[in-house]
Structures are given as C-alpha cells and as structure tokens.
Length: 473
Image (cartoon, rainbow, N blue to C red; front, top):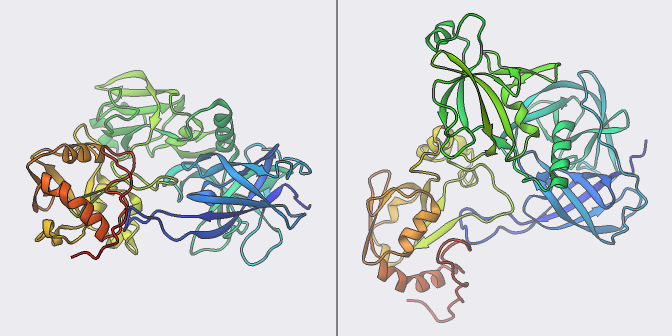
C-alpha cells in the first residue's frame, strides 16, 4: 500500500528563551508527518508545529512543497489541524483518509510516516499491546492512549497509524530506554478534537480540579463512612476557581463519574473493555460541558453536577505559542514560575530549586495565590546594589501583601510611589524607591539590550525602547 495521504511536514520554530524572557532562541528546523483528512486539511501532532513560524508540506509523489498554516491546535491532547495556503490545490489529487474506530488489543496496525534517517516514506507494523491513560509528554496531561509495539521514531511524530485501511491513531511519543513501545492518540480523542474545531469549542481539555486518594485500605473506607461493597476515591483538595470549586468538599467520596463506578484503586471500566483511571472520561469533553458525579458525604449518597473548566495548576505546565510573562523592575527580573522555567536546569527534577519543585509537585491554587511570582535574575545597576544574591527565589510580599499573580504583582509595582518593599520566601528584603526605578528603567533596558520592561499585555505595557547608541557609564 502506497499511502499517498501521508504527508511530510517541515517546520521552522522559534522557542522562547526563559533565561532571557524578552527574547527568543535561534530558529530551528524539524520535520514530522501528517495525514490528509479533508479538502486542504491535514492532521498532525501539536508538538510538530509548536512555536512554529513557518510551515511547509511535501507529498510522497512530488518534490515540490506547499505552504501550510495552523488552523486549530490542542496542545493538551497533542493534535493540530493544518490547512494548505499556497498552492491551494496542492492536495486535490490526494484522497483523504478516514478516521476509524477504537482498536482492540492484538489488532494489527501500521505506523506510517517520515522518520529521520531517510527521505522516503516508512512503514512499520505491529499490534496494539495496551490501552489505558498515559501521560502525554507534550502537555503533561493524563489522557487515553494506545500503545503499539511498532517502532515510532523522530519524524514519525504526527503521522497516522492505520488499521484496516483507516486512521486509528496519531503517533505522538515513544517510551525511552526500551525498544518498540510507541504510543498514539486514539480515535475518541481525535474525533473530539475535530468535532470541537467544527463547533468552535475551546481547544483545552477540561479537568475536575481536584486531588484524590485511592481507598484500598478497609479501615480508611470505614472511617469515611463507606459501607461494605461501596467503593470510590476520596477528595483531598479542591483547586480554587476549578471545576469542582463550590461543588465538592474535602473528604467527599466520589463513587462514580459519568455513570461509571469507580473502584477503590481509582479506575473505571471504560468502553466496557478495559480498566483505566477514572478521569479518562474527560478526554473527549469540552470546556463548559457538565458531568455528573455520585458522591458520599457525611454518610449520605447524593448526585452532583460539575461544569467543566480548564486545568489551571498553580505552576502552569508547558506552554506553547505564547511568550513568557516577565517584568523588569529596577533591574530585577521577575517571571511567573512555570514548568518551562524549571526545564532551564539540566535534569531539572533534581537540580531546580527545591522550593520551586515543591510548588510544582505539591502546590495548588488558593483564593490568595493563583500563580507564583519568582525573581530569576538581577541585572546589575546602582539602584539594586546589595541584592545580587536573591535570585531564583519566590516573592512572598509586596508592601506587606502577597501577590495574587503576575498581573496583580505588576499592577502593584507600576502604580507605586515612594519606597517599595519586596520580601522573598527566604526572608530576603528588597527596598527600592519607585520614582527612582522609573528614572533608571530606560538606562537599565538600554544597557542590557532589552526592548521592553515587561511582556506585552501586562499592565503599563509601552512601546519598545530604542537602543542607546552612546557609550554607557
């Protein structure tokens, strides 16, 4: 089988520089795979086109390339829909592929794409070996995935996996350190993404906004008021502003979700064929959908309805196609703590500041804190002498008040006059005169070749500062 509907993608990308958040890294080139699914439309992986500045596609039957653009993308489920721009008839001679049904264990599949190591199309065959919720490395979301024992290598990314002549998955990652264990996005999530694009739905996959604990311990179940035969998971924490805020309470036991009974190990029998994590049902839901939960609270059973909202952890996971939030104030560089910033350390899960890792793994949004504002570096200037040791610390207070998020932090400092006192979580004290900071800002930005003192869109954003050509003291 020739697979003319499988297309090669050429992407030029420019990632942000989180060490210098006012600039971007050097552009890089990469390749991936895609599949034609409609007139001028191709389906690929979101990580193939993340932070892309220019996209081209190439058919197997021609050396010529066409220009493409991103029509829709969901970084949560690692899917993107591309559209041919020029020439518009580039794919007219290609018959679109059809999305098939969910494969079953032991079904034979073929991974088709353009992996590194050659220019021609590659076909590797294997069988479905596992179906369960997996962590998507592109977004750190836990969603339904299908594992196959066919080889998936760099360049295969975004390419189709065929079964019985139809697309039964999009290749998106492989398990490192082992051979022939690759994973693909399954049809239910593909269909939800494509249907959402047609309906104009938001691309994020919702979350319940809760932390739960399994109930495999019989004494714990008894302590929570569960009778013999009752099963579920117990709610430990509810994220402020999340889907379950105001609906669920700590110590509620969720016994079923969307009509599926939850076992004591936190799993459900999904699609009547395999057992996996109970939040699997969220993978094909949209922001604004409502979902029913059966819970036991204070010894009484009841049914509640939750309106689904996007996942908003205290420390945002990987972000794409948007600049980092930063603010330069008196030569002090402040950023929002994100996973992207953590990854600036090699083996960041071991070497990043332990305080930051604690926020990442154990922190949660509260009414008083929606984001963690951190001081990442000090650009030396006479106005900040003596503060050079306080970098890579979280901000505790500004003038005695804990900042809610970066927006609140910038608003507070931008409107301040007179002496401003900033404290870090280690107890460090920074005292600046707000009026002196305003006078020093053009000098500092010019000295360090920084075009703006803050990310465009933050309060007080101004046009870029023209570089000074005269010698600086």
